Length: 140
Image (cartoon, rainbow, N blue to C red; front, side, top):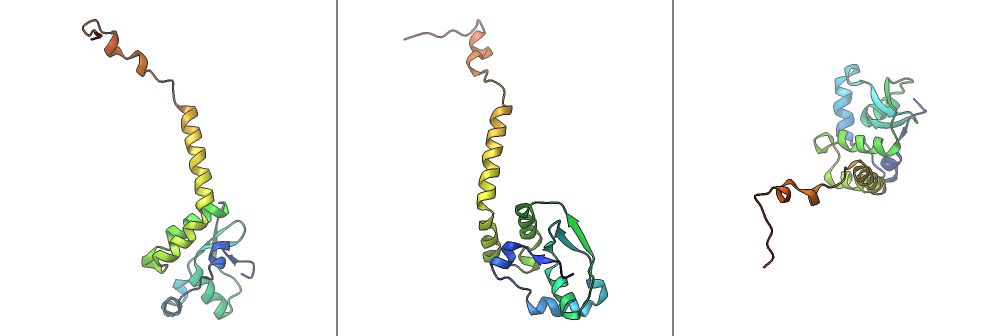
């Protein structure tokens, strides 16, 4: 469990688990210790409260589910998993999302480039409307 670490953006913004969440999880006892989600680099995506409580209780092990994702994909998932109903305010989620801005810009550019390559040639200039003998174009 010592190998686990917070996501770099989580640490950069000095985020921590609110005491009321720790108290609520402690009341649940052992069933509250469901597996936490981590990346292949051992960065926690979801389960900060369980991780913090386990450290405070001196647990040596904690069940984890490892996702093979990039740091940016992990941050996207962290933002999704920690919606307001689960503790992170809108402001904090926006701050975290701003860390994703360069990644999302690159992703959007790649999508635009891929979309342009996969498009077929335009057929607007040879529309069937103008080839139909019933229609004629007159110059005034």
